[in-house]
Image (cartoon, rainbow, N blue to C red; front, side, top):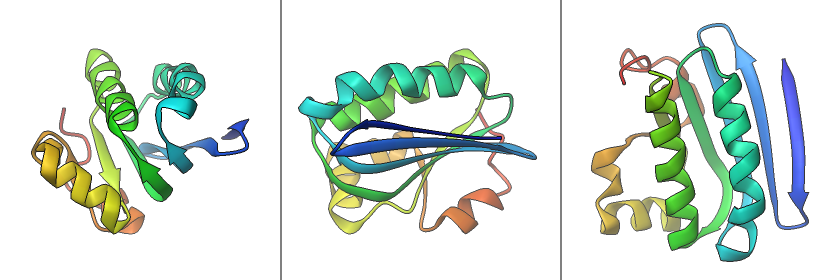
Length: 125
């Protein structure tokens, strides 16, 4: 199953339900101007997930505190559904922000989507 949503010109969310996991791909800028509109779509995608979730960040060009809050909220929602949630392929500036804030220890962060999809701990909550 494939569902894509253009939230506005600066950000998109696409969710794919695959055997064994769900991929939520974000693309564009995750900032104060975009996350409010994105949050509801993210929560719907998580509510529809029946398997561990990988958030593909490879298309995210910018992330600020509002973007980090979106990811933390997504993790919280996934945990409420007893689903694991990991991050995949953050670009260097986003990876640096995760490291500086300590969120790289709260999330499992994979170098690539392929690595995330085959990770043995994908199902870990």
